[in-house]
Amino acid sequence: MAFTDQCDLFGAVDEAGINLVVQHVMRQRPSLFNYGTQLVANNPELWCAPVDPIQTVLDRGNPIFTVEPPLPLVGTNGLIGLNFCIQLTKLEIDFHPGNVINLPPELGTLAEQHFALHCQVCGGIGCPPKDIIRFPIPIDTHQRDVAGIAVPPREPVVIPTRELECFCLDLFAVCHVEITGPKGHQVLRPVLDGIELVDIKPEGLENSLECYLKMLLQLVVLPRLSIAIQKYIFEIPNLFSLAFSATPAPSEVPFNPAIEDDQMKVFVNLEVLP
Image (cartoon, rainbow, N blue to C red; front, side, top):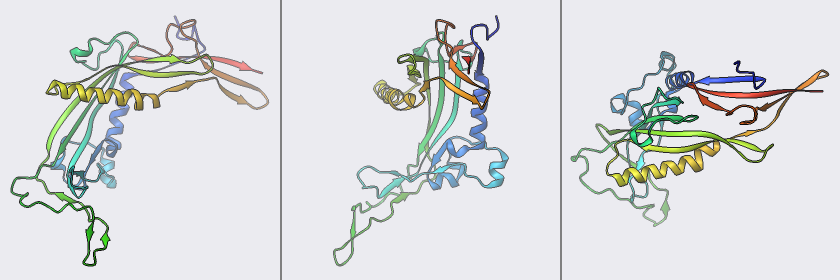
């Protein structure tokens, strides 16, 4: 059966294509995936994970890291900071039936019409050697001159370090998409079914982090990925207009979009208007 037997237009995107594009973007725009203080950005030996940019990035002197302010030490009014880095080292998607990502046992096998996500984040904090910290550093919010007049806070003291205490976390998520809302005002939105952080101890810490990430995805990230389903009209002056609309599911097609065969498939109806 042809893909357009139950619709006028058909489109699909393959998981391999998406993952390949992500890999290319990570090499062409590494600063979107690597963040750290100036000291870390300037010293590759401090990075928690290697970065492999394309040669053009190096030739043009484009940044590999996005420079961030130091991590403030709580209770010092921001006057003492630590070097750090955060690096997104892996990001991939896997459409049903699931043959790219090995899901942890807690998430089971990938169900029909579902897709999985996997990202790996590596990071570290620059903890200084014991011989560097000898005397407490004044942490007044405002310094005052001899006349007692407040002056702006001084620049934070960034504790030097020879290396970062690095770690890597693997996050897995299982999602599906659904259409909600009345006809004519429908919205296609991704829905989170499960999330798992691997090998975080103790269990309470892992559960707390998963709870936070789950709320972040459900209330902040995924709603911004929702797409309004409406009729799009393309007009050719003095001739006719074309109206594009999603093929209704399940009345005309079982699922739209359909997540299957390692692809996300979209079915569209086409109407010629006078």
